[in-house]
Amino acid sequence: MANNDVVVSGIRPTGVPHLGNLRGALQQWVDLQEKYPCFYFIADWHALFGLEERSREIKENTKKVLATLLAVGLDPEKSTIFIQSQVPEHLTLFTIFSAITPVGWLERNPTLKDMVRAEEPLPYGLLGYPVLQAADILLYKGTMVPVGKDQQPHLEISREIARRFNSLFGVEFFPEPQAVLNEYPVLPGTDGRKMSKSYSNVISIEDDHETVRFKVRQMITDPQKIRKSDPGHPDICSVFQLEKGFVDSAYSKDIYDRCVQGLLGCVEHKNMLADIIWQYLEPIREKYFYYLEHEEELWKIASYGNEKAEKVAKETMREVLDIIGL
Image 1 (spheres, rainbow, N blue to C red):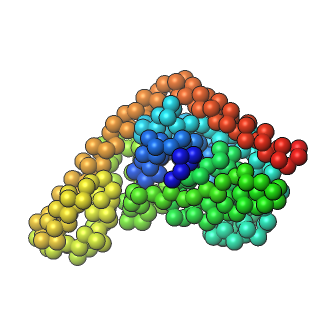
Image 2 (cartoon, rainbow, N blue to C red):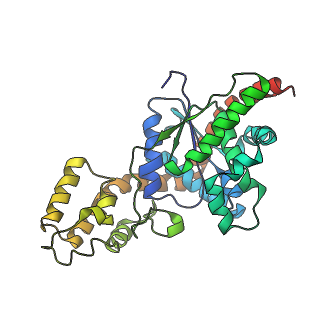
Image 3 (cartoon, rainbow, N blue to C red):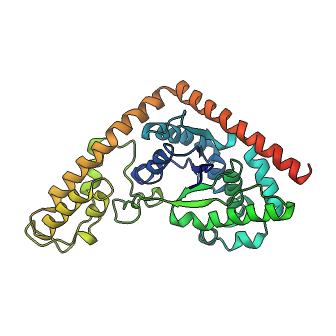
């Protein structure tokens, strides 16, 4: 990556964050802040536009997500951590991009097609979701966007919008952001599917030790392994797959071998996994509750990040308005 790379990413405030968020996206954010300028925002406009939460829930969830970002290790001095709606330039650039983005680009978005089947009628905000995402990224001239594979179509629209703006106005102003795919595995939930609040299969940052143990005990393991001495099949076991997200390869291989050889029982393995998860989760959870209990400090950090982000956003919009002649 070039020396002038900038990382931009956001997280929707759609409830209490879970292990999939922590170990996946947010751990990558923490790693990237050590190498690049980073802009990380709580995407409260996206929560409203996506109809995932009603407005009365967004502020409370924003507080919880902000506390989580700090608890996992994001540093307000290394990263610009802010709330999307508190930087008005996001919607200003969104409006400009809406004027130049063909509807056909948005209608072919596969994520939209899934949402349309479940949500009628289609709100304009949902159709324009990728346009707002482009504004979020390009407002800070982001070149690197940490995303999961399911978000790549949205990012392609961001690149197309950047190219279209540059072409229409005869400038090379906006960069074409590139995906930074997550190196961390997608964690299975307690039912074996991808960990997601929509599946109600998550281990949450707010879960205590006993709750973690209870949820792990409910997980389905290898249906062919009835007794401890039966040869197991770790590749089809959700407990083994979840564990891989928290241990090194040597530990994982040892567990694999013991399971295959009938030397490790499922109940014992679940107890081991619950302890591994708790060892990871406990210090994060402690910091999380500290920030929730010190709300004034939490909002002060948000205000600091909002000001940093708005300073950059205002400069970008000054240049954009000059380019388009407004």
